[in-house]
Image: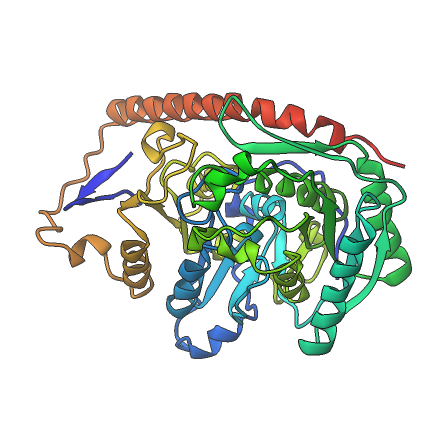
Length: 444
C-alpha cells in the first residue's frame, strides 16, 4: 500500500545453528547496548539509529548491480545513521574498498536470518580470516591470490591467518535464470568446499572465510553489456550461492571472490564496471570486509545478549523499488512489533525483478532516488514526519472509527493480498531453489 507524498510516494563466540521456527520479534528481550563506533556521536538520551541497505545480487540493479557502484550510497548513509548494516554486493568493489567504522558487513543469507529474528549480530574488533582456493585454479592465478593475501597482511595489517586448497576442483557452473532474469549457478563438488571450511575452522581456528572459486571465463560478447554498465552481472548471483552454502552450514562470516583471467583492455568501459578491470583479482575488498564483519549468533537465546544487535534494533530499511520480495525485505515489512522499521523503496534503482511494495501490499516510502532516501532517513532519525518536509504534505488529521465489522473486513482483505504476494514471490524463486539443490545436500 502506498500513499502519495507530493511527487514521491509515502508508504511506512559463535553459537551453533538453531532449527527453531520463525517467531514474532515481539518476543525479543528489551533492546540492549551494542557497539558501533559512530554511537559515540549519538545523544546519550537517544538510542543509536540503525538502517539496513539491501541491493539484491545478480538482478541487474541500476545502482549496485556492477562493481561496487552502490558503495557511495553506503558511505553517505554512514554519515546520517549511527549504524548501517549491508551486505557484500553493496560494499565490495574488487580492488577497491572504503573503511567505514560504523558499517556492518553481513552476508546475504545471514542478513535474511537476522531480519527474521532467528540470528543476532555480534560486532567485533577483529576476525581470524581463513582463505580457501579452488583446486581448479591455474597456478598463476593461485599465486596472484596468495600475493593479495600477503599484501593485505603486510600493508593493511589484516588478520589473514592460513589458506587451504580444496581437495577437488569445485567445478562452477553459472547461467541466467530464464524465469526471472537473475544470474545463478551451482557447484558440482560442494562437499569439497565444505570440507575445506571445516578444516580451517577445526585446525586453524578461523572464524571467517574468504572463498576464491575458479569461474569459467566469459565470452567477450556476454561481457559487453556488463562492461558498458548495462544488463546483469553473470557472476554475482552464483557468488551468493557459494557464500550462502558456507554460512548456512557454519554460521560464520563468508564472502566469495571469483578467479578469472584478465579481460582484454576496453577503452569505452563504463565507470560502474571499472573497478573489476584494474587488477588480477577481486579479493582485496573481500578480505577487508571479512576482517571486521560481525559474528552471527544463531542460538542467541542461550547466550549473553549483551552487545548483540537484533532485528528489533533496525529503524529503517532501504532497497530497490521492485526488489521488495526477498526474505529480509518481507521479514522487516511484516514485523509485528510496534517499532516496525520504515521501508524506503528507491524508484531509480530498477532491477529485473517485479516485486514492488504495491504488489506485495507492503507499506513503504517510495522515493525517486537515493538523494531523497537519505533525506527521509535524516528526517526519520530526527523524529520528523517526512511528509512535513514537502509542500502541502500534511493534511487534516483523520478520525479513528471503531467499527468491528469494517475492521474485520479490511483485515481479511489485507491478509488475502499478503498471501497472494507471498505465493507470487515463491513461484519466482522456485527455479533458483532448484539450482541450489545439489549444493545443499548433506556432506561428509
